[in-house]
Length: 75
Image 1 (cartoon, one colour):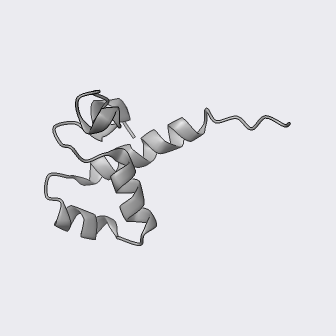
Image 2: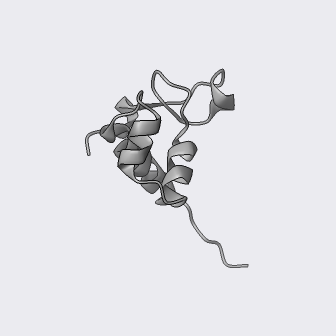
């Protein structure tokens, strides 16, 4: 996947600074929740014509990248 940052922006004036697909108000978390609820990529693209397949991949790559920085600290 090419750099997901070319598809995702973080602007404090859009969706309270949530990471969103550039040029839309569709947040990465929206895409992740749709996928988690069982929607297929095709269903998402049909319901949200502003999105492209690469936007879904960028949202997944963004989430995976962010997850790689989470550390569990033993108490």
